[in-house]
Amino acid sequence: MPLRCTCGAELPPNALFCHLCGRPQREEPASREHDESTALGAEESHAEQPRKDVRGISFGNPDVIRAAYPIAVVAAVLGSLPALSLFCFLWYPAAGFASVYLYRRRTGIYLTPSEGAKMGAIAGLLVFAISLLVLTVGFVFGGGADFTAALREVVEQSDYPEELQRSVLRMIENPMMIGLILMIGLFIRFLATAGFTMLGGALGAKVLEKED
Image (tube, rainbow, N blue to C red; front, side, top):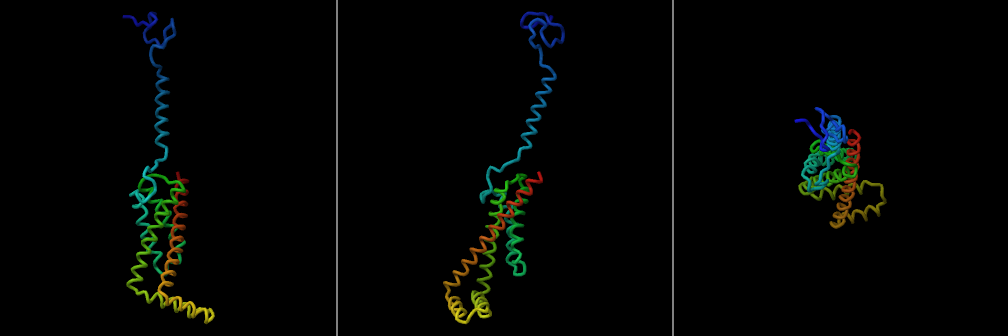
């Protein structure tokens, strides 16, 4: 039977349009190709969008801990060695940078500089906790008297006036003053550790972001 348009006109074979009313009779190949290319472009655009970790950068994210923990152990050991502890301004930023890098390698997710700073802060907290554990073990098994004796020796060998030296030595003999000195020292170390690792984490996120 001959093909007919909805208007009733008889159509020739393979007609694209009705010669009477102009109604399209079938989809044009060009139109299909355009639609396919548009859909493909949308898929590629969606695929190129950076992935985000819905769990966020926190201690509750296992990937964050797995990336930060081994780096924190290395940095804590290096920072606890007498000969290398002076270079903590290098180890701690490197720990923050490396934790961001390992997180990127593990998840394939890029971090913004602010997220990198959070990653560095988590690495810094782990570094501080491990370092504190090492110091505590050394203080307990090494003897607190050694610490007091070391302080006394430093004061006695200083160039301060004798009256000031005697006042400081009396303070050292007070266990509460020793505890206060230790707390102040730990607080300063915590600030330094967290600050350096946050800086390294933010820098690592920025550098890795530029590589994309």
